[in-house]
Image (cartoon, rainbow, N blue to C red; front, top):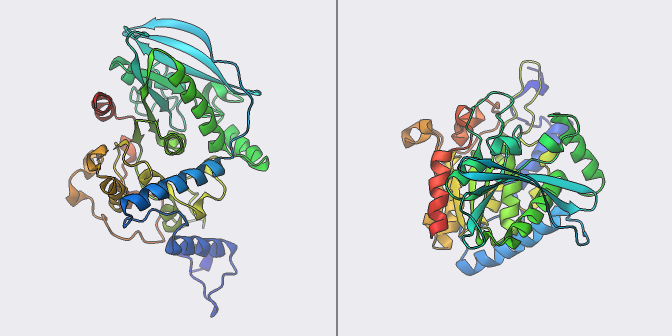
Length: 390
């Protein structure tokens, strides 16, 4: 078999060097995983060491976000208000940057007022979602999981203020309709200017959060985040940076992103290796050498976190250890997909993920089920109400 079709990268040279540049880069990732990033979570941390690590990780993440320095901007503006069953649907415009506008939908339950403030949940959609889908005003253009993405509406119907935004460059903020490819161009241009897609998205979201806290009818001590799939890329860094976020709902499977990159190397019949799970728009330059996706989840302890789609059990246990260190194990709740709730069906729990997997094989090691990838209102809404009552 020609070496370019090998499932696993392996140098055939006596000096173990790679002529294949892809193999060279892959070896760098292996070494990063072996040596561990500079700010990786240590499950042996004492409580004091953990708290110190949290500060250092948060400071480094803020540096990596490359936030611009922006002068004071105008306050958000109410564009429209319409009545819906059980809540008011409001459209607002926010102005985080002199050159930009961020539209959002706010679903305010009936009875909420300055005299009766309510908690708020800022909701982030998946890669093909929009704020209108989150608000129940539209449905997925793919027709997949119809009626199971109305995050903001579900929270509003339960008495919480639901706030829905678009991912930058999609929905109302897209260049041409729903052209997802424009986000890759946005990412390239931002990278050239020393910024990046998620840095911009988190910056916008932080401005929205600051505004929400200023509203008299919002209970500023009870603000949470809820993300689905691609929306997790905004939600997790935002929660790490903003220590006053009360809780997060992670509507996605949890597994270490570096492990997945190293594991999924099996080419197809044409010799094409899998495209990474995170496209260019998900890249934060330099982050891999400092910490990974599991480390950021661990840094959220002891705040409340719900994982609705399970994940690699070793990764979940690593995050759980952070909550043990903070004596708050009950603040992290995880539900596996129905087909994996019985531990006997999780055949690869605590098994080292091998290299040479295809993108179809890897989900078996992370206990993922793409057929049930949507907003799990039956889990998230009652859990969030319980958290807000504590």
